[in-house]
Length: 245
Image: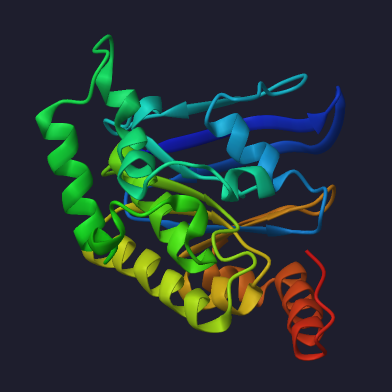
């Protein structure tokens, strides 16, 4: 049984559809990379999966295989205001346990132990008392990934997790995400404009556009006309230093 099933979904903004008849499934341990042009509905899809937005006109997203909607970890794109958030690293990471608290108005000992273990796993324990606002971009993304892991051991939704990072921090972040997927079996759904990394890491590709749409394995995508065309354009843009997010 699939962890996540999307059926006949229509995505859009202010009632205007941008993608219609979207169908795909995600199984435990998949690494799904979502690609497509700006405005194709990638971030809107993630927010719909998280029930932060409703489908317009038609369609549904359901969870299965023991996955509850509250067991999905989410790393969104950061705004400038969020980067300047005046809280300690420990407080930011612990906030990922809020969905586990239920009616409890406080963090339990188990929550604190979980946060400490995850910070150690991601190599940020030494930063636990530091102010989040003064960290580097790569450190902040690790903190937010730790926060997302506090919410789940099953599925991570990552919206451009390496945006704005330098090459070294980008490589480190992709390495961490890959290990979480391959070594710990955590399902990953990631939006990326970096098609070369997407094709290197992903097991499946979802390409959003008005027409045509594609969903399938990475190998099937590379053989498809849309995959070959998009990869060529994006790789050429990257090599030319003129990539636009």
